[in-house]
Length: 66
Ligand SMILES: [Zn+2]
Ligand SMILES: [Zn+2]
Image 1 (cartoon, rainbow, N blue to C red):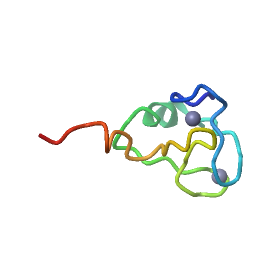
Image 2: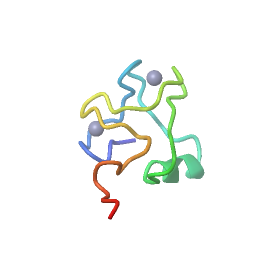
Image 3: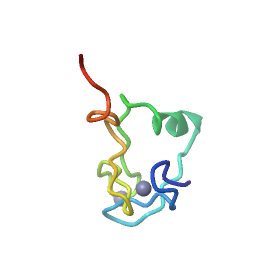
């Protein structure tokens, strides 16, 4: 699938494996800020190789806590 931030193929920054959600729940987890996604290949937290955006705890810096 494509990275939702840089629109390149979503590759794990560590092993360069293109991430494909195995099921619908995994797909939705990509846009869930509470979900942590691990690379199925190397089991590291998934980070986009191209834009270095981590796919776990998204929005930590975007969302204010006021
Ligand atoms: Zn990996
Ligand atoms: Zn990206």
